[in-house]
Length: 333
Ligand SMILES: [Zn+2]
Image (cartoon, protein in one colour):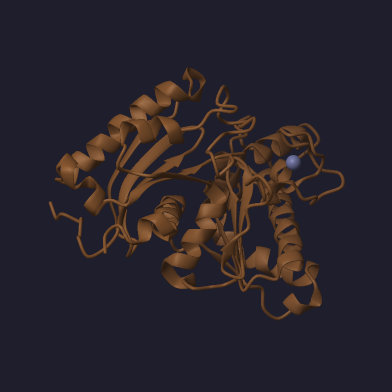
């Protein structure tokens, strides 16, 4: 196997923590991703157990990269963690994370720094780090004003303004999923009525289908399977009920993205996440809707693209968090 560790470049151990899986990889400053691994998060078992299993994964990554313990701090600049939030990036402490129950007020930083004393540990919110990755690697590199929106189990955002991450007073900025998109819409898990997340996320597609199913007289051939995958696939196959749901979701996405463009005026708004991939064949319709609902400056051109960095986008952002830190910049030079 080719050894991707290159002494002339910085390398980082990158970690992406979601409610379902924890992924790790070794990433160099050119954005080359190698040694990817994944385990289940099992958040209900507590952060200490997750940290134990994550540490084994990190040790394994270091081992696979053929490095001896003595050379770690010369070749790897640190550990970057991208995580579902809310999380405070200064101390890594979670604040009532809905998808990581029992982790409130807990942090990976002290645990991992004890296990890997030569490697500083940095933490960031996954959507913010996705935005950071977009401005550091790939086709939007060096963009100064960029928004990243993930439409997935939840809807979240990352904001880069004038080249800097916007993190807010306690690191919880970017909750773009809770802007209003529909006055007669569904409540999200947080409890706001008619928000982007409550009306366009994966679970929202299911709720929307359940709400409408009994009232819809024709075309409902979906056999009570209201999973977002089945709804989207059925709409592709011509099911009128499923198509009705998908159209409403496209409208909700367009309304949410219109508001975000109006507020921030980014050079580019990048979208990703499971719902985005599943609906990528309808992107032109979303853009057409935005051109008629957003401010007139977007009539001719809507600056929205699907991420070119794929599923590694937050992992790349976690590595960039390590590379950008002043204490790690000189460690390999
Ligand atoms: Zn909400």
